[in-house]
Length: 627
Image (cartoon, rainbow, N blue to C red; front, side, top):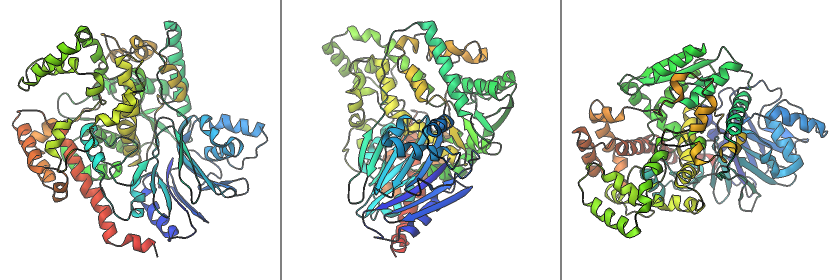
């Protein structure tokens, strides 16, 4: 596990890239505190920071192969690298290390970009071919590991964190459409970021680049649901077998591996399977003291029944405010998901005991775990109404006062899924954004989801929702939090559910095997009911609830008002309108907590990321690295 930053020039030494790379590498020390390495040659500078997970003889990076023809930097873990090593040795390929890094570049030397189909794991990597003067890179199928890029006149830069690339941009600007989408989705949808000129390499994509040429992106993996009828009992066995197999692969490490453990079924399955392989497993949980915001007792009971060591920590509101600047800084882009907070603290807790932890991310998207996925069942009666009747009902419902019972239900039943569902979080509507933004709305949120809905015409409503979340929420929110909050404490977080072998089973499941009136993740619960503690099997999903609703009314009120009055925010947000929302929330007139939190996170991001980057420009950093 590591982080890297690299720069590739069209022309040799158009600016002092060595100094730039050295300075940029310092931004990634949290990703790799154990070691660093550099490689410089014509057109290319590579920097690498390493977190030692596996004892890999000679596996330092940047790593060379084939008499220095190829140079690679790689962030992630390839769980099947030992099997791939055997294949390479059988083909007569000589390996000088025991590392998964060398496996990637060795296979690339044999089969080129087809190497991405051989890899089982999480990854982003760059390979420079010194003979052909070509760059090849790739990001894993689900987007578990990040990869940012900036293209400028002189060349192209890549990094595991976007902040390391900001000095390449002469005029830092916030992208208006990104801000608009952030206020609806609570994150900036891929491949954009909040900064103009900074993009993400999309998940499941590889690319080629040559000096004086353009980047050529290719999608090698696309998560397409293919519901296929099958024998139910056989499916149960396959689901269990593939997840067991994935957990076993994800436990491969030369250092101790722990588990995050909540009261939900996903982390319980992972912890149960991991404890069968490692009876001395350590698990970690955090919670809040406020009633209704804790699964600690459930997690502790699970750990006790499994006979494993369990560590717990209760977070208070004061320390959250203290740590929020760090949380926001590590996220790179603003992410207004309050669940980032407990992820940050559970990662901190785990870092005191282990370097690697397993978690349950991805199970909800693959196996239908979100409670909102039951909505098509409850709204099924509306399918019998004609479009004219639905239209009339929408006009009628709109004039009803807010808070009238049944208003939201009627609206959801009459408005097409494509117009209302944008994923698990929906904050400001297009109309509300006109009230909160300084500039007129330029990009309605439907522009993000429209191309995805066009790919789902043959799917049922629930599976459409799953697909939307796979393409937006999972990669833009869930996996961003998981990577950034764990790496903030130099913890490698592994997610066994997001495995291509597990996906090959999940994508073929029928809707009724995942979601019914009785609950979510039906086949997952059934497959593991005999081995996980009974008190978890049919427990309704709670998630990672954070009591921001309560705190914004009380102890956080003055602090929130100060955040909203931030001078930097005034350029983008109508502060008086947001202050009005805060007062309505404090008086209990309406719950605006999630909307307020999005503005507060953006305000803190302006101070701790954007503001610092601009200040760096004012300190002539570009002139410094330009010689």
